[in-house]
Image (cartoon, rainbow, N blue to C red):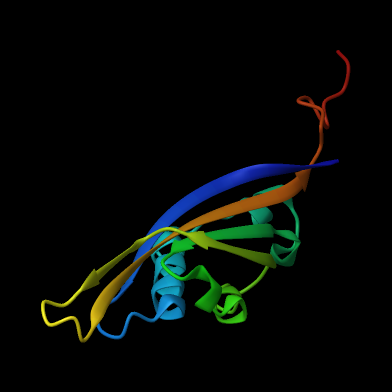
Length: 123
């Protein structure tokens, strides 16, 4: 068995007022997830908690992102959140506030057989 990448989903999230990196990151993850219903674990006959999920967030001030809050968006799986510099921040004309944009890449991996013909018998 080997851990294989099954899914790569991308999302974008914003915090219109307040420039909250965590809020934008959570919204980016929801954007990536909520448009799909993937049944990979079910098809493979595995529990959904077996999914190995890596979340990569690109946002201004990545050190301010609450990784636990981002991971809590997921209903199941083994979640690992990585944050790096990215996204975009747009100040208001007065400079008193800004809009923050974050990007998320969600990678789902699962244990699968290395053999391309697993379960087949010789003919």
